[in-house]
Image (cartoon, rainbow, N blue to C red; front, side, top):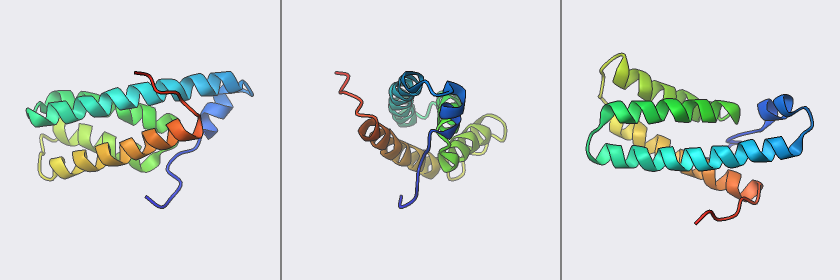
Length: 119
């Protein structure tokens, strides 16, 4: 992805200058997004579509707070396709894209905010 993939404008507005709040929210995003992407990959291997949709819903919210618009829309589209349209055509490719680009974002956030390894 050769474009700006996120920004903290929404978080900055909510934080009203509290940099610790922004950092804490970004760390929470990092932890949650990493977990949900791992969950999606696990669910995909057993074709647990409902759980994929639920994880995509959680990711969509997380991506929205970081203004990662393309990922937010992709996650919402996956959720909608599975739960409401019952349309699995092309869903594997969408899931793969979400996980790949989501991990790029996760790694970028980790780098930008110097988030330590959590092993």
